[in-house]
Every structure is written in C-alpha cells, then in structure tokens.
Length: 419
Image 1: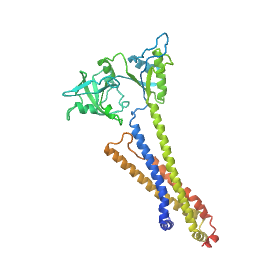
Image 2: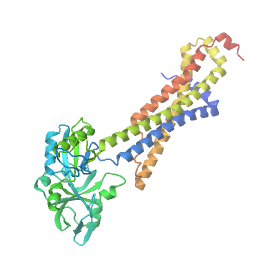
Image 3: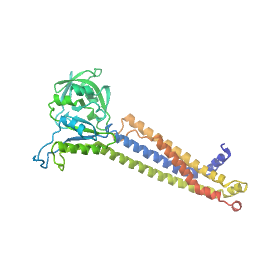
C-alpha cells in the first residue's frame, strides 16, 4: 500500500524550501546530464572512427617491400622479392593460422595512371581494383544494384565489373540501364554486374571512383600475370591477426630464401592491431566519462546529504513528537531516505531525459547535414541508462544514511525541549 500521507508530508517539506531543494537537485541533475552527454559523445566519436574501418577488421595486408640487404644461402643483396600467384595456395596450405588468402592487383591505385574507361559517349579515368568473391566486407563496400563478384567470375576469369557510385554517375546518363551494360577499360570490354557505395567515411569519394574486377582477370588482361601486388590475409577464428602476420612473413622469408634478420623486405599493415588500439582508446574515454560524471554525482549526493542534515536539525522537535507517540526508528529512517531518494531520482531522471534529447537532436542534425567525418550517431544505450538509474538510487540512499541515523537517534525528551 502507498502511504499517501507520508508522501504528502515529504512533498510539503520540500515545497517549504524551494530554493534549497532546487539547488540541491541541480547538482544531481548536472551529474547525470554530464554522464549522458559524455558517454553519448564518446559513442558518436567511436562510430565516426569505426566507420572508417572495413566491416572485417581482422585483416593483414602484405606486399613486396625494399630489396634484400643481407646475403643468404649464397644469394646476393639487392634482390626484390616478388609475390607469385602460387604463393596464395602455398600459404593457405602450409600456414596453420591462416583461414583465407586473397591476391590483389590494381591499376592506378598505388602507382601509374588510372586507365581510360568509356561507356557510349561518356568517359573518365578510374582506378581498377582486383577483387574476389567474398571481399566486399574487406573492401568496405555495399552493393546497391546487381551483385558483387562471385566464385564463377573468379574461376572463369570473366570480364565483369562492379563499379563505384561516382563511376556510375560519370559514365551513365540518368535513366540508362547500368546492370548488363558494357564498358571499355583501356580498350577491353567488361560487363557491369553491380554497383556499390563505400561504407567508409572521409575517403568514400575515392573508393567510389574504383572499378572492381576479378583479380585473375585483371592480371591476365593487363599484363600482370606473373606477379601479385599484395596479399590480404584473414586469420582463423580465435587467432589474432598478429599471429597470422608473423607466421606468413616467416613462411615467405623461408620460401623466398630471405635472411630472417633482413628487415623491410616484406611490408605489412595489420588492421586488427590498429582496431585494438582504437578500442583501447575509447575504453579509456568511457572510463574518464564515468569518472567525471560519478564525481559530479557524488558531489551532488553530498549536497543532498548536507541538506538532509539541516532538515533533520530543523525537524528535531517534530521527530521527537513522532517518537514519543510511538514511531519506530525504522519509520523515521524510511521518511528521511524516501525524501533523499525522491530528490535524487527526480533530478537524475530529468538529467537523463534532457541528455538523451540533446543527443537525439545532434544525431538528427548530423543526419540532415550529411554528418561529420569523425563523429556519427551519438547515443546512449539502454544498459547505460539502466546503470545511470542504479547510480541515482545508490546515491540517494547513501546521501540519506547519515541524516537518517541522526534522526533515528533523537531522544524524544531532549527533542521536546528543543527550541
């Protein structure tokens, strides 16, 4: 049963000291508001940064680096290690930590001039990237029309292409059919089987100026049949990409007769290491946000405790009368705790609501304006909101413990003599 008389009494007590109650509640309000905004901003920053990562972040990229600097097995220095098509199957067969290996070649991406591409009366120069079935997440692309490359394209070395959004805009007029159309890349016909948008923020314009074709088709059609530009390595589930990176490089050193201490012969980039660094950074940001906000909430709770001490002092005579009439210490404690929890709960709830609405407004503005490169979709999840509510309840209870203990310890005789 709800004791309406008790709650009416609590509200009356708070109403008698409006300014004091408002200033005390503001401390709690500000703490929860800051917690919500800081965590939401951290989420927005995390989203903005993570949007720049491929959908599959545990990849290692390996390419031929500098020439050898140490002689080995009678071989001279100055040799350049060439990655071969047969190395792909060898790595997948002999390196136990590797789940998948993709060979990648390109035209104009890392060096040289992008090839001239024509469709009817429209033309342009676009980067051409060799790809494989299953590499859409690695390349961070979303197919918007048609399909991506498949296993049959790879196996049969089909002359098919998946084009980026900006390629489509430049080569095709409005209303022209895209899927099934033919384009000429450096004089060679390719059939368009799909279009894509880049998932990455910031450099999506450059990514959408690419044309993806089967890598073996690229190698044979554009005189790159004897070598592979780079390998994309995916480790097996449960294995960190750093393990696969070291094992693959060690295997290639042995396979290519390179001295184990010869540094820089193979270049590599471990995406998972960078991903882990970013995750660690945002864990620290979240911890700092909680530290600042909890500190602010604690300060507000201390303010509530001080106010409740004053309330107990002012109501000493009333408490004495209650105890003289038979009120138990538990009922006195309950009254003080409920009053404290009411202040913190109401103030904290409004802080949470205002913070969530502010984040929602910022998110809507970003969506309407196209967003920012390093900030996207600020929000607070349900778990965080639940934790904030628990922090409120605990703060309210802790803030009232000392005043409640003093109230329960009031001597009725002494209290009735209080002026």
